[in-house]
Every structure is written in structure tokens, then in C-alpha cells.
Length: 524
Image 1 (cartoon, one colour):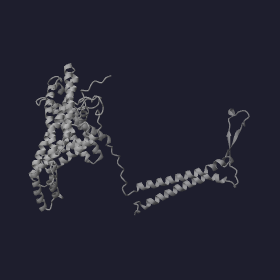
Image 2 (image 1 turned 90 degrees about the vertical axis):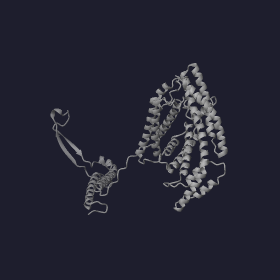
Image 3 (image 1 turned 180 degrees about the vertical axis):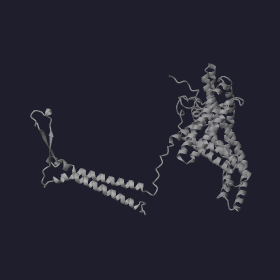
Image 4 (image 1 turned 45 degrees about the vertical axis):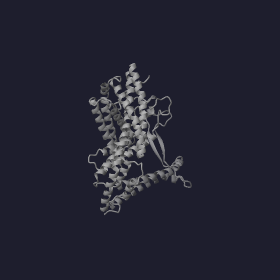
């Protein structure tokens, strides 16, 4: 039979018996220690101390002169002697406190020991050690993603100046680096969404991101020297290729400016930032190409290579912006033609859904608002509203609605990609990760409406995040006198590393270990 606490009654009896023994022994010891003090208390007669006479025989050869030859009688005084009275009384109170403390501690120890031994309910599990923090690892992962993405982008830019039939090993290394980077972005994207949930697994995921990025950099570093040998000195064909591409883009830039004006008037779409960046990079490239030509003429091959590489990167970014204007104009025209058909298909889809009792909320209002939108209006935004109003996950829809959703998603992804490409010196890991996820959703082979909608949302979030990064980023070189035109934009765009007063070295093909190999020698 057990008590309500789960302890046998005979165990309780044994505990009580042990406590009685401890208390009895402690009390006896206290009385023994305090007895002399109470005997000598004021008002009581002092008894004579007992004496003990002990005769110790002495050796004749060791007895000093004048001592008793036969032996010595020593008198031992008992603890009741008068000279002991003060010290015994002074020790009384501390001894009482000490004995009481020992008894209480002993009683508590016995109770705890017996309770643990006779426990019938499971003891609480020991708390797990604190999970390792991920703050430092997260920062490393973000920095690794930014660095690897910059290396891949710069390597692709430089490879664009190499003939398609050449640079096989470098192109293979770039494809491998792109695959590693895509995997790193996917892992980091899942981590940002809370997957996995376990703290240790989350930290390992970040470690995996860093490892993937480092592998991407190693792949590019391994082929950097080979690409330099393939391209040869800056005074060879490389400078001529850059100059020819520069002249072509200069001619297209004037037409792009006219296209931007047309888009604003016809659709109310402002695309001025495309041409603003184009002009900034072309101005920068003009100065760098001139410096490269002078360096070639003077025989300064390394300086020529440094100036040429900076010009190539700026020309590539100007080309991205001009291509973006032309692509946007084509998509706006296509969207304009799709709006009537998409509206009709959406209304049919909505009528069918209404018969099934599954009509999306407020779909009628959205479609009516699109029809009543005054001109000029953005047809891509109109398609986004139409397809979103009648979207029903898992339900079949008209082909024209699929086409409209795909067009909207592609436009959003390209807009975010163009923005980040020419401002990567300020864009953080979040915007890049969102862009990578948007591209992955857009590349889905099953062409489900959910994928197009997801790509559109992710791309717009990437653009918003990148714009916030650029607004928060300081503008080095912008307000300092004496710097050449376009220098601030080149640093913002990642054309230059921005680590030196002149903007630093241009970013070349390669990983973190080789991308800055055109850095000027440091003075002692």
C-alpha cells in the first residue's frame, strides 16, 4: 500500500526513525558541549576541578640539577577550571547555531535522498543544451551568396566578349558555378521560410549555403588564368570588340530614349531609369576605352587590361538596359492585344464558376474596373488583375488566361533581373534569393497557373527589396569632386569593387580569389 505521493509507508517510517536518531545524537552533543558553561553561570557555585596525579619516573642521567630525583608529580586541571569560564560561555551561542544548521541540513538531505529513491512518477527530463546560434552563420551565408552571385554575373559578362566557339573550359566552369549558386539560393530560400525547423538543421543548412558558394567560386577561380591566356593582351582583338559593341549601343541608346517617351505617352509607363543607367554607363565606358587605347599605345599592358575590363562591364550593363526597354515595349504591345480576349475568357470562366457555386469573391468588381480603366493604362497591370480575379487553384482555365499570366510573370521577372544586374553593388541577399525563386517558378515545366502567379509575386517582392537596398545604400564617390563621370554608377553597378580612391579594380572572370587580379600594385 502506498501513500498519495507514491512512497511506501514503511519507507516513511524508516525516514522518521533516522531523523529521530539524528536529532537525539545532535542534542546529546550539544548538551555535552554546553554543560560546563551552564555550570559556571553567574549565581552558581564553582565546583573544584577534579585533579589527577600522575607519577612519571625519571631517569637519573636526564634529571637536571635541583630537580626531584625520584620522579615528578604532574597535576592535570579539568575543563571546569576558572580560567576556562570565559571561553566556554563565549562559544555557547555559535555552537548552538552550528548544531542546529547541521541537523537541518542532515534532515533535508535524508528526505531528498529517500524521495528520489522511492519516486514512482518519472523524473523531469534534463533540459537540452542550448541550440547554437545562427547569427554569425547567417551573416556568412548572406555574404557568400552576394559574393558568389557577383562573381557569376561578372564572369558571364566577360565571357560575352569571347567567341562562342572559344573558352570551352571557362564556359563549363561558369555553368557549374551557376548550378552551385542556384542550389545555394534554393537552400537559403527554404531557410528563410522556416524550413527546416530544427535549430541544428537550420544551422547546417546555412553551412551548406556557404559551401555551395565556395565551390562556385573555386570553379571560376580554376579557369581564370586560362581565360586570360585565351583573350591575350588588351591591345589585341579584345579592345576592338569592345569598341565595336560600344558604337552599336551608342546608336541604339538614342532610339531607346524615343521608345521610353512613347511608352510614357501610350501606356503611362515610366521607363526613364533604363535610359538613365544606359547613359551613365556609356559615359563611363567612353572614358575607360580612351584610357585603354592610350595605355596600349604606351605599352602599359596591365593598365590597358584594367581599363578595358572596366569598359566591357559598363558596356554590358548599358546593353542590358537597352534590351530591357525594347523587351518592355514588345510586351506592352502584346499585352494590349491580349486584354480584350482575356476579359472575355475571364467572364466565361466566372460564369461557369458561379454555376458551381465557386465564384471568386469580388471578381465581378475587378473585371468591371478593368473595363472602365481610362487611357492611358498599363496593359500588363490589367492582365495581372484579370488573371488574379478568376484564379482558382487546381481548376482548368482558358488558354488565353494561361498566356496572359505567363506574359505578366515574364515581364515582372525580367524587370527585377534588369534592376538588380546594374545595381548589384548595393543589392543584398534577400532580393537575389527572391529573384532566383521567381526564375525557378517561371521555369516549371508543367505550366500551372500557380507557378506563373508565384513567379510574378516573387519577382515583384525581389524588385521592392532591391529598391529598398539601393535607397539605404550610401553613394560613395557621388559627391566627391575630382572623380570622373560615371564612377559612382560603376561602383553601384558592381563594375568596380569600390575599394580604392579611384573606384578600385574592375571585376574580372573568376571567383573571390581571382576576380580582383587587375588591382594596382600596392605601394610600400
